[in-house]
Amino acid sequence: MAALSILNLLSEGPIPYSEGLRRQRELVALRQSGDAPDTLLLLTHPPTITYGKSANIERHLLLIPEDYADRGIELIPSDRGGDVTYHGPGQLVGYPIIALGEGNRDLHRYVRSLEELVIRACHRLGAVGAERADFHAGVWAGDGYLAAVGVRVSRWVTHHGFALNVTEEVRENFATIVPCGVAGKEIATVSELAARIVTVHEAADIVARGTPEVFPS
Image (cartoon, rainbow, N blue to C red):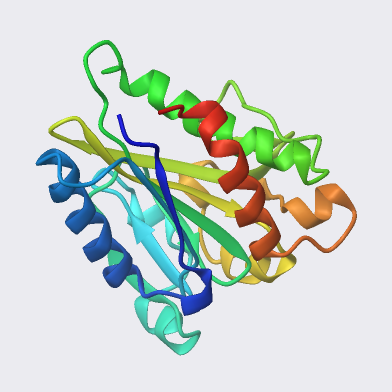
């Protein structure tokens, strides 16, 4: 089996959500046909709010569409699982395109592996409070939502993935939603937990280095 390929796209700047989805779908098709290895895309998006098929947008979007447009935030329905979340500068997004072969076709275990990848990276960056929560998927620091996880599987090839809050830049726009439909919780960032400025590029490097430990070829 070929080693997992990591494509760090941060040098391209924020990639529109629709373009990121197009690239994912291209890689999913190639992976399904056996013409590409497992791949992890690392990138960031311009200000975007996405919502899954079962999202309660009436309750979890706190502004009207015109207000989001005035803030420069795009609203996009998504085919992933999960509720409402925000993507934007200061956040590292990871999209693993991974074929779940025989013996690995357990979506719950796959989500746990994604969480483990992010938790290990956070600890290495100094955000030692990063952990799972018993009330919701993703990565948390107490009541602080540190990373969202939302996935989709097509013919046992994954896409979508995780969104890790790295810098304080994400905080303002997160205040316009109920993140992932979990009311009464705060947003946490890696920089806050590490008590230093952690860049998205640094976070991407650490995630990339740790990926083979969690998703060995």
